[in-house]
Amino acid sequence: MFMLSNFLIAIAKLLSFVLSAYIWIVIGRAVISWVNADPYNPIVRFLVQATEPLLSRIRRFLPIMGGMDLSPMILILAVVFLQSFLVPTLQQIAMTLR
Image 1: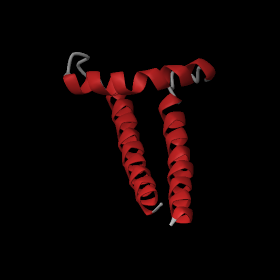
Image 2: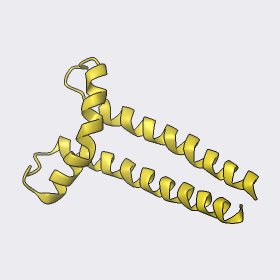
Image 3: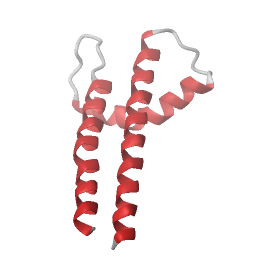
């Protein structure tokens, strides 16, 4: 049981790191949308490929707000919610297994 507890704690930490990194990727994507970034730049392409699948799904449900794209903010809020819910839940499960 102790190994499973440690494994869940490690998964929780890894998940927290990945979700934090994804928030920064979404922020980077939002910033490049404000400037005329080269679409052939590998960094720009990575940011678009990493975020567009989720952002496009969110855009389907959002009304058009006078040219403002609120989908990155909604995605960041969703990731923060997941980070605030999943990581502590995994940690609590791990602590009960000890």
